[in-house]
Amino acid sequence: MNSTDFDPQFWRAQFPILQQTVNGHPLVYLDNAATTQKPQVVIDAVSGYYRKDNANIHRGVHALSQRATVAYEACRELAAGFLGTSDSREIIFVRGATEGINLVAQSFVRPRVQPGDCVLITEMEHHANIVPWQLLAEEKGIELLVAPVSEKGEVELDAWKALLKARRPVIAACVHVSNSLGTINPVEAMIEAAHAVGVPVLLDAAQSTPHFAVDVSVLKPDFLVLSGHKLFGPTGIGILYGRYDLLASMPPYQGGGDMIQKVSFAKTTYKKPPERFEAGTPDIAGVIGLAAAFQFLNGMDRAAAAAYETSLGQYAESQLRRIEGLRIIGEAEDKASVVSFLIGDIHAHDVGTFLDQDGIAIRAGHHCTQPIMQKLGISGTARASFAFYNTMEEVDQLVAGVQKIVKFFRD
Amino acid sequence: MSSEMEDLYQDIILDHNKRPRNYRPLPLATHHADGNNPMCGDEIDLYLVVKDGVIEEVTFQGQGCAISKASASLLTERLTGASVAEAHAAFKDVMDLLKDTSREADLAEDGDMAALSGVRKFPARIKCATLAWHALEAALTGEAEASTE
Image (cartoon, each protein chain N blue to C red):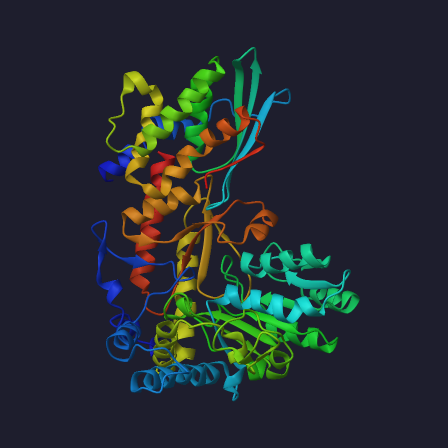
């Protein structure tokens, strides 16, 4: 697909926040891996809900409650379609990818493990896909196995396969796209290898779903998590996809209203999934905003958007590499538009502060992936992460900003 | 460059960043603390030799930005030869200097530390400047670790 098939200005115009100046310069927002901006349709959906339809769901007989319930459940259908499942009962609304992983750790893995069992992850995981397993490991006496990552930032597939075969973990959990290195992992092969030895897989799709279509009917993960706010939707809402037979076998994650069949002090029975895992009044406005984000993305040629983003990332890398002393961190063959870099002994935080003065927002630090930073012998990176609303001119501004910093610290 | 940026990255800061003073571990340290900023992963190891209530030597090592490195370097210069009581007082003084925007930095009173007051215009960077000082307090009170959080 040729990147010229995609018109970034058309999509950019739908994001009001991008039309501002910061520190006297037009905002160049390159922190999309941390969170993405929201198109007008998402903002309108959230405010429209509060202006017209606000009511609690699933219980009111009145008109507002029915409207809210319909809108809420419509998002479940949209999410199912977005992820490639025909069964919307496989969609659980959670606060974000982090809560989704914790839910799987507590409700799927915890009841199944014995001391001596293990869980497999990779070295490039976000803290959200490390710490929930460590909490379980401490409590249950299980082991956390870590598949190594090469210097280039690619999972060593042979080691992943060997660990699966030799240790048969209770679950294997891996990130689809690394938030700090940009690596797109070969998850189809990773999941296939796990399934070959009967190991279920949780896929952390928080960073992949914003860049390209992720289809569970093709990749076949047993669980998948994503965060709405990284997908042009509101903060505080995300999705856990789970195979229905697995969800149906799992105890509730939290207890409360809306997840019960019948409550008495003698015995309480629970609803089936997905309601079983949605205790309490959910983030209704968040779900309705997320629905608008799905519709917004459904209206886009996502393959063309992905190709355009790839060209942005590659252009940024090639321009940045021309700067003396600059090195790109994360040089996988297959990368999303996430560019981590370091310049000589200039610290990433100083880079971040300087770029902010030019209205350029990037992230500096370990990006919640301290273990892979330690492995690479660095404490953090400066990271520019792109979305389809970014432009080649913005890449040029980033590069010019970095050149100024180099000059400042060298002189 | 804006005047705020010039205040933040003053020559003293840049100089201490490029040539940090007392940048080495102390094998015979009587006090040591590992200061870290969980927000960014920066880490500063601070070593002290304290004898009869006097800081005879203070050194540091670690990973950090220009601000946190310069702050640590300035700390070692200021506190070499100081009493423990003076060090505690300096800690309070520096926290005050870095956080209280109403206070004018005074070269005579604050010495080179005044160069750090530029961070007050950059709330996200204040913790960079306080990191080494938190490590100092931890080391003197017998804590092995200090955090800016």
